[in-house]
Length: 218
Ligand SMILES: [Zn+2]
Image (cartoon, rainbow, N blue to C red; front, side):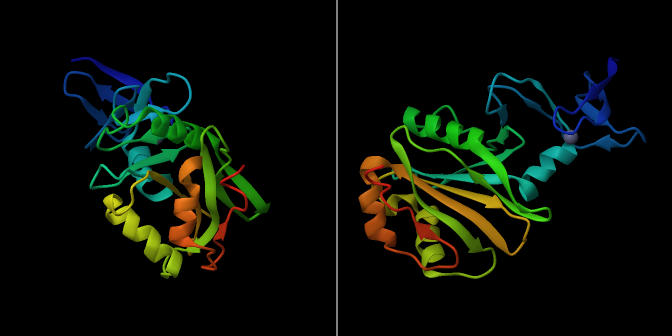
């Protein structure tokens, strides 16, 4: 039996890993139900560089609660593809990455790399992508309630539920803020499709969402 101590690449916590049983145990000896690797060809991958390493079950779980979501809506797919990003690591549960149009994947990687925390004051802030350009434009951004619907969220949800209602790809980026009742939202499209998105959403006054002026000609 090969039992050795491994370290989670995200939180640094130490675990016993039994390579024959493919199981992790925490320091109290409890067998943990799951383990995963950060590697270029699995559900977890580094958005920068080629980082390999173990993701502990607690960190894997935290992707569901604390990560930013990049929701990729492609008209040729009937379901949106959601990639979660936390601390420079992406989680692609259905392993769709690698089979998407190349310019979409490039935009997603650049968006994921550009996600950063903006501090409003010592207690408050939000995550948002700082990515701009390269054929894709930021068409809408701002904040939205996490529990109330609006004209904007109804239109966005319609696309996210059925991407085939549009004939061009849209990337929604939904990030946590320090306020659990508000989300930071950014919407990217190819520059040539920006006008079509503006026709769909118009000037929005839903919560803090705004149309980015001159996105089509930026
Ligand atoms: Zn961890």
